[in-house]
Amino acid sequence: MIDTRMTRRGLVIGAGALILAGCSNGIGSNGAAQIDARVDATQSFLFSRYPGTQDLASRASGVLFMPLITEAGFGIGGSYGRGALRIQGVTVDYYSAAKGTIGLQIGAQQYAHALFFMTPEALEQFRRSSGWAAGADIRYATPEQGASIGKETTELDPVIALVFGQQGLIAGATLGGVKYTRIIP
Image 1 (cartoon, rainbow, N blue to C red):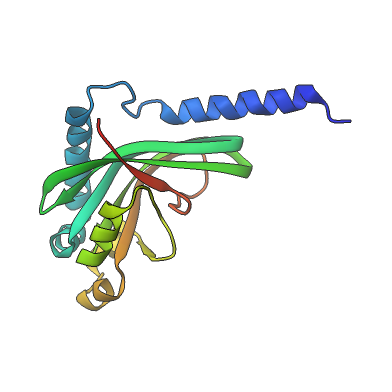
Image 2 (tube, rainbow, N blue to C red; image 1 turned 180 degrees about the vertical axis):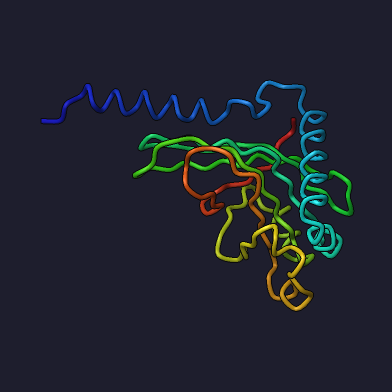
């Protein structure tokens, strides 16, 4: 017989982790202005700390900046954040990123990431979808590689993802299984 106290406890802990995942992410905030301010700060940090990423952004058809993703889990977990898609440096849309997980995990972390859409087709596919999930067509790179990602590489990789600024107690940050959805802040 299954002990229902353990099941309820697991559900309560999982729900708490999901609520925690929304903390400090601007939920209930003044919307677009706050997202834009965070995106500006994230872009400035990325370009000043890793100068090669500025060249990468100039060659991209568009860049989705997600300035703050909060992830937490204790068996059941999740992550959430909001950001902006910029084309030629101008915000054109706002997006949320959400992921749910289950398995061996405990802890919390925050990080930022940027998706560089290197082809007009990849950007158009992202913008036309009702909910785009990060998948196999993404090439992961470290910010330090931003300076060495050459023209040949970006012509082969439709989307390049950089994860940076990790802080917390969960090992690693991956975008696998993250779903991006257009929002109106």
